[in-house]
Structures are given as C-alpha cells and as structure tokens.
Image 1 (cartoon, rainbow, N blue to C red):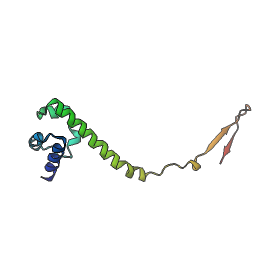
Image 2: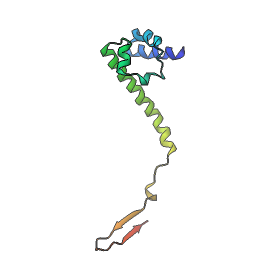
Image 3: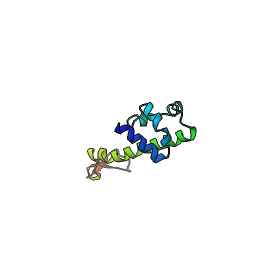
Image 4: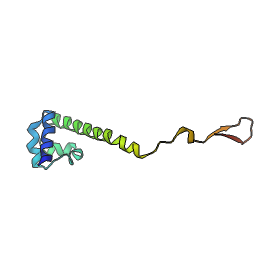
Length: 102
C-alpha cells in the first residue's frame, strides 16, 4: 500500500491527484511508472494535456535516477590515465619507421 501512496504523492505534486484512483485501479506503482506509454494513459482516461505532462514528469524521474546511478557506475571503472598511453611520432622523411615516446 505504501507504493500506491507514493504514486498518490507524486500525482499530488504534479497537481493531478484526481487520477490517483485510476492508478490504484490499474495497479500502477513506481516500478511500473517508467513503462507507461501514451496509449496506457489514454486507456486510463487521462486527458491529453495531462498525460503529456505525466510523460514528461516520468521522463524527468528517469533522468534523475540515471544521474544518481551514474557516479557509482563511473566509480567501478578505472579511467585510462594519460601517462599510460603509448604515443607514436611518425617520421616525415619517407621512411616507415617511427619513434615511440614514453
């Protein structure tokens, strides 16, 4: 039931609390919210303007989740250090030899 309360709070924040009961009837909780599509909201009877606003808000929720998850994902991978890269200098005297600079 707490999940449904979260949806109710989210809708209230959007100024669309009148749709809370429809979300409950369709068992839409935060885990399902990112999967909602235009057609789903239309089937639930959400007006066109409101479902555009909802989709935008859902998209914003997704970008917030990504922004929060990105630092931990970046911490798992070690970035290449510039000093570890091999640099090569090509000669312009017509030979195919090159010097490796370390």
